[in-house]
Length: 156
Image (cartoon, rainbow, N blue to C red; front, side):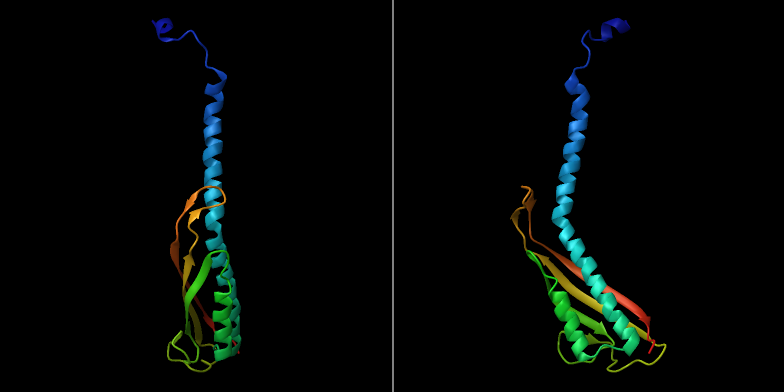
């Protein structure tokens, strides 16, 4: 009975290699999609590094003055590269009120030793790349929300 169910032909070479080829192809496609989306992740990491630098300033000074806040916003907006823009940056925390782009929690000067300093950054990341990527994969425009919140203790 078992002899009748068994075919006389052995599996060919393609039967052995096809699953491996499919696995390699799927892995390659996933890798290409990652490369196209890694720019937004890298931008988020760079924004986090900048926020940490300004958080250290807030720890040392007890607050961010106007010029430091302007520099922070400028550095975040300068992260825009290759069809990806950072827009509508809002900074909140221990900062002076001087423009509608900056929101404050009511503190307009140093908070004092051992008090909490907070840096809250909100921005929009706009990925305006559309069409096809360099790899032929369709890409559509997308928007992401960037929110970084850092909190520490003033140590000045």
